[in-house]
Image 1 (cartoon, one colour):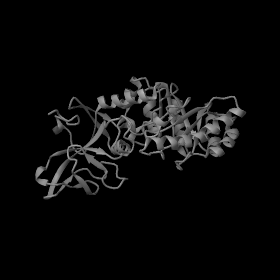
Image 2 (cartoon, one colour; image 1 turned 120 degrees about the vertical axis):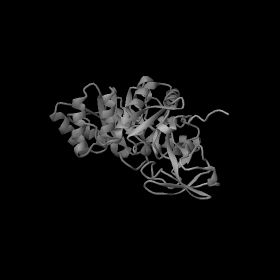
Image 3 (cartoon, one colour; image 1 turned 135 degrees about the horizontal axis):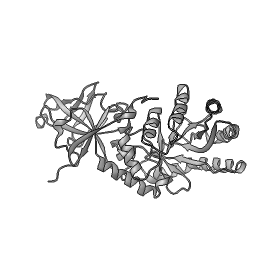
Image 4 (cartoon, one colour; image 1 turned 30 degrees about the vertical axis):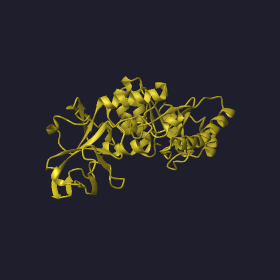
Length: 368
């Protein structure tokens, strides 16, 4: 019987709870992404999932040059590894505008851009960057159904007209995140994607009618990006693909990605004949979803029934099968905020913990 891929022979060297990652599986997920995209130039991965310099370098080694991020710290992490092109997919308001300016000044070899969805923010950025002799590239952020940020396409044409000639900024593209499209049925996912993208196509044609410019289009998270591969002149920005998680594995089973990041936990108490307790509390796995928030590869019948800051209680068929100190390997339902709970990720190669990588961008600030 072969050893399960996830087991760690020197597990006694790893405290629990811990985040463990598997570089060979990460590299295979990257290869699958490039295969699906058909052209590596059409990929702008979102790094909010991994927040780790070494993981981003694996993407660079595969030929990926453009990245997307959500925080100034993530943008700085990318600049520190000489990323060529970094899109901050978060409208910089308040002190973030000054921090973005500092990034642009400190890392001249990286091309930075950000998203905007209103004329006021565009004006503030215009004044700030022109005053400091910089010109910031911006994408107009479109709301095509996510209803979280962005301007609706029918209002974006007027916004474009109002800001396209402002000093200090240059509109280079459109950004549209369609994270609301998560249908398990691929036919329905494609239908809804086409329906949402039609609004983007309409806007592109309207802008082309008044301005001789070819705008970049950045669209598509991990569930939706395959629906855009048939389109021309678009760039995809999935993020979760690099580690994958239980949620997307079951929401979009047609996608080929495999788990490449787990959490390990130990049983710390046997409560009764059907109940055990582990050390995987709220602080160790993303807690925004209802239970179960994690599924255990080597204990598939263990059912989480309660959780607190440092404890996760499991109902099991027979607790006599477990001993205090036993290790469980868990797949989070949502890996992105789980990664952000850890300072370091333990690197597993050939069933051995070989080193650890700092989750550097979990911090809100690195130096800037």
